[in-house]
Amino acid sequence: MSLLEVSDLHVSVGEKSILNGLNLSVGEGEVHAIMGPNGSGKSTLSHVLAGRDGYEILNGQVSYNDLDLLTLEPDIRACEGVFLAFQYPVEIPGVPSGTFLKEAVNAVKKYNGEKEYDAIEFLALLKEACVKIGINYEMMRRALNVGFSGGEKKRNEVLQMALLNPKLTILDETDSGLDVDALKIVAEGINSLRTPKQSIILITHYQRMLEYIRPDYVHVLFNGVIARSGGMELVEILEKQGYAGLGIDTQAKN
Ligand code: ADP
Ligand code: MG
Image (cartoon, rainbow, N blue to C red; front, side, top):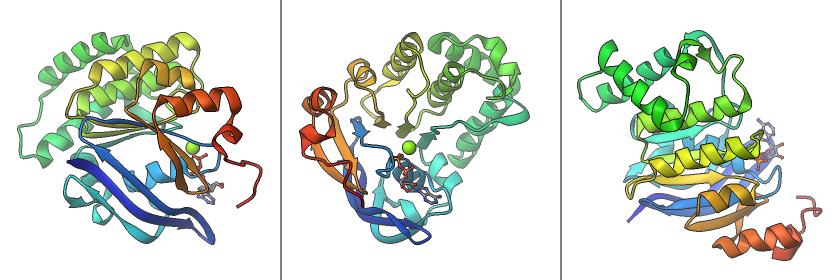
């Protein structure tokens, strides 16, 4: 059964049409990589799925876990298990990371009618997750993302993913700005969290990331539609021949 079914999605910002009839089906437990040149609509897709405002949905449907996703408020989507790791993580001055995470996790608990974690229970959970992801717990006392290095921000996202246990994780260029070692650590973190129940959409430019996190499917987004779908062979063609190797002319203006 598919967890996420995007059908004929048309999205614009102001006058500009960005997604032009996008179709994507993600099954439970599957990892889908989305590649594509800059400006092809990758971040727009992730923002629309997470419910960020500023986008106009002109047409199309998104069904998620049998819910009409586009009708749900962003916080409800998060409580229903949609997690978006931002391309540029937000900084929240004054709020320690640990506090932010506790609020986020407890919001989901509350939504599901479960008992919320108290400070001591959450601390134990957080410390365990930090060890698993390879984050120094001291970082949790610092304000969220403020003064974090690129690698620390990304690891923090993996930590959020570990604690929230999302059904659908969308990682938008989680690898950008990472050096090779950090990339490997983030990839290992993501891999360690993979379960047969959790689906991942991984937006990336880098073959290296996909070598660590072997996706089940690879898609190439271009001009607001999925132009090609396949497996790792698409990544190899891209690496060797660029988009032209897939018959995609990135110079052609939309
Ligand atoms: P990608 O993530 O694939 O690089 P984006 O989804 O960020 O692409 O952007 C797709 C296109 O939409 C780009 O041409 C971008 O300039 C445009 N776009 C995205 N967001 C906005 C916005 N808020 N206002 C105007 N144009 C936007
Ligand atoms: Mg982007």
